Image (cartoon, rainbow, N blue to C red; front, side, top):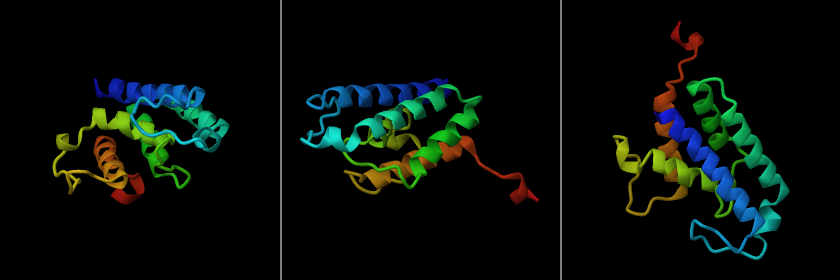
Length: 138
């Protein structure tokens, strides 16, 4: 069931991110860690990851969960730096929605940028959610 995989992806991203904050010498994704990574992503990043994880786990239904993920990825405060929670989340969601799983493929190069990967995930989530406000249907 896809709902379960999406929720697991968020849970794993939060867990990995919080583990990274506890010990910045360990980045299981293979990214180089900088000396200031913990300072940039410390308490605020920890709180954001924990809050988002809780929101996803408490979502009332599949559409609510998908909408929360989309809103998080599109929020202006969401940054996709090497050690940002959003990048951990993007990595996990790419396992649920591999780039070749959705046609037409949005990615245009062999080594896609984070923006291309984010757009791919947003496209996949939007297709699942199929947002159609009632006001627009009239």
